[in-house]
Length: 107
Image 1 (cartoon, rainbow, N blue to C red):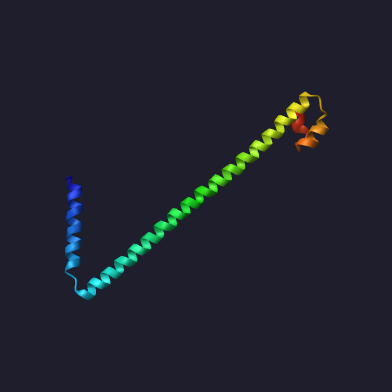
Image 2: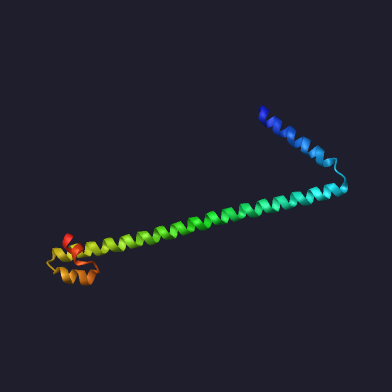
């Protein structure tokens, strides 16, 4: 066993020995304080994990929405290219695709 691990084991044994020397009242107070500490720690850890999960979900939703918007825009442009290739006037292409005239002319 490495020295650091041995040291940690011996420190933990010393802590246990100190606790076992406590009077009944002090032991109850110690146990109560330890419970309060663990409850607080678990609540904070749980809140942190929940916050991370919510953040990831929010990020995924934003990413999906952005991807959908990009896909719709690209679809409009592709349809406009086809309409333009078929000789449709730029004004009609703009009307049906929702693109502005400058965009249609640049395709």
